[in-house]
Length: 83
Image 1 (spheres, one colour):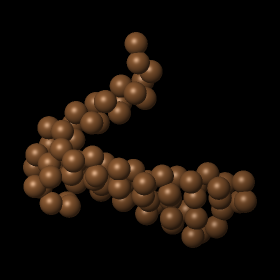
Image 2 (tube, helix red, strand yellow; image 1 turned 60 degrees about the vertical axis):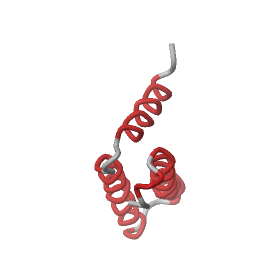
Image 3 (cartoon, helix red, strand yellow; image 1 turned 30 degrees about the vertical axis):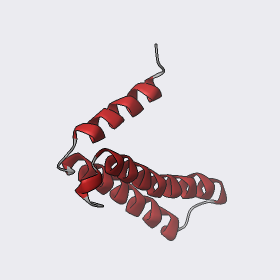
């Protein structure tokens, strides 16, 4: 049996493959954007040195996740544009 994270990734891949309209992609990207904005606000407000690195990593991870889901969606739907 696959670990839960692998199940989640396979489910996400299937969702993106079936998402010809880009609706689910747009929803995911919005969630990443909101999380990134929230994290950036926390960082801008000032955090302890011990909290900075994990929050900065989260900010970078949300940006990377946005790129990854967009590229995966584009591979499944090459004529669908960049969304």
